[in-house]
Image (cartoon, rainbow, N blue to C red; front, side):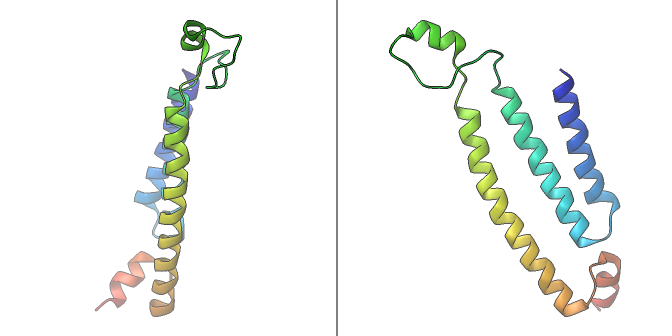
Length: 116
């Protein structure tokens, strides 16, 4: 249960970065923290104590596998989420660099003031 609470704390830290910080780079880091917190939560949902890999061995009956086997679906979802998150992060950094080239600052308040 404590792991779920720590995942929630990690998620709240990311939301705090999004809300309270004015630097674009810090906001991007907050989004990455939120992404990792959600991935960790999904992995924790699929966790089973003393579980075995999701492979059916010859000496294992299907009933034993259903009782001890770990669900592979959350692992596949998190793997897909990591790949998508990396693509989104690359796009965010590219937009951030374009904003810096145009406004010469990462501060959102300054960018809003210079927008005109």
